[in-house]
Image (cartoon, rainbow, N blue to C red; front, side, top):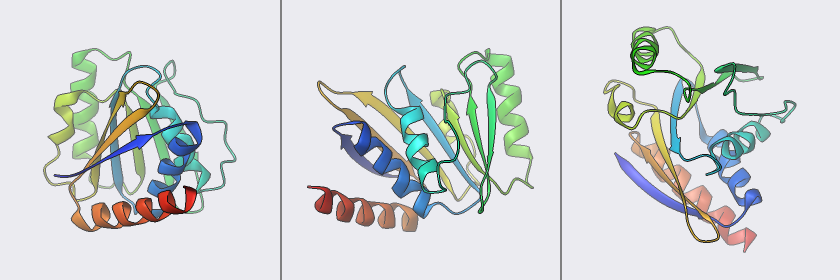
Length: 164
């Protein structure tokens, strides 16, 4: 997998990273997000949704597990696996990877670490690992598709240069 690490110094920067991902993503696409509570997973998804007009109040669906947003481009599914046990996780991933008709964009928060490489056939798949730094966050994006990786890297560097 191709890898890029990005330091986010504030909430607005995290929104920008999500926005850029929204601009580049083509369906179907699966984002698996791994990170501690408060590390920026939901904020990145808020930024992603800003690309589509941000008409929704984006919150992590911890208690209802699943939230669907309809946009002009695609349905976007926001899934939080925090409360699922191992059997439920296995069932969820088996259903996800056997459902070949899915043409949507999916964000999974609290994805199990070992699940990130599970779907070897998915061309458009990314794993985002969120970590705390002293006064910032470190996002590491792992993506299989080299074109997506290269384009994201280039556009992100362009926006970062203009933002100062």
